[in-house]
Image (cartoon, rainbow, N blue to C red; front, side):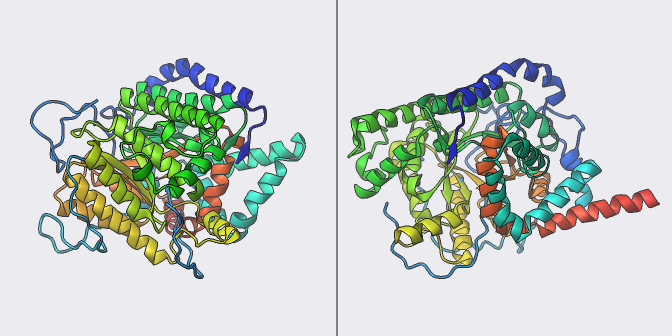
Length: 545
């Protein structure tokens, strides 16, 4: 958790600066107007048709039927830890890491092999064209990306680097400022959009020129401070929704509940849910009435009510502006409370079954209970008449979860083997696509795993879902996996980049965790590094010629 120095003042000033940057955003509107140009790569600047916020052209396009084909008229809307014994485990790939009727359950391994056209081969994405992906990047940007990803693959950097940075933050300004400058010019600029929404919008112009939407996320998490810190964090997210929507900056918004709630309250509510039979037992109507949570003191109940109010304010703003919002998953010991809040907000704001969902929960597929949580969400949606929506990730807290489980003497909630996580992800992906085909769900595949992307694309074809079906999205992290993102966009799939932003000191917990937990993604970035190298060689040869 991050101790907020100055607490209210620091975050409040950031919130105010975000609001005051409205004039800058308006002035920059013409230069930052998003457009679709799928042929210029991740650096394309060519201007074509404008892209409204949300699903690309979703708010201006014709509506889609249940299987994703455009219709001819109208316009679209604006539990306790498992007791399975933990064994020595293979490292996971940790990622960005997501009804009127319930479709039949699909618990078998997803292994589609045919597409709707009758071809007997699985969908394959073309991810090897370095010129198409990086051709418009400046050579300086290309070299920086190459070096940062190469450094991130070094075990010493992943293991010791975050600790060194944390130590520098306790030292005098003379030492702290140079450390912050180095981090900002390397890892921060590679993986984050900037220190403000204005910077994030400008940094992602090239993505939006290429038809790729953005998930803007004020990436503060686990804040500790005065009460107004959480209110100010909610205001920052709300400002992001309002300002980004009004300039057509693309995509989704995102929120970490720990940014608007004390972790102690989330932990207490999670424990109460687990000890009293789960969400369906304590609140089958998802009313989010604080009285439904047993064993809270009067002060805790009042704080919990304020947490609900803050999150509701943000989700209402997202609903009113037509901006989908992703509620991030966090650590296991607070996740049950977050899931409860997410489902309650879905009941309130995902009522229109004929339009894509507004509020998404996040499913961590490295958890042994992931499939059960999806089935629970689908069941709630069917019983309470709302569209269940999930962002599917593999998970980003594996090291933490295993350490805490070992310290507290319970079995790790995380799968023991990477193969189990892959199987879980693909099973849930198939289940959610099945639900989408019945128009009872929306899903985002937040993954850097090429196999999972191709399986999902194949399953969509099997279910006769159009690539641009507005209930299906693919997403990768900003600064990584650009070849995959571009390949998906060129095939017509809805694609996003997850773009965190915020002051360097506030975003460092995110960056530290991303580097530490995503060693396997970074280790697997050798293909991306290879593409950077190919593009650099191509430029050298062209210049020599």
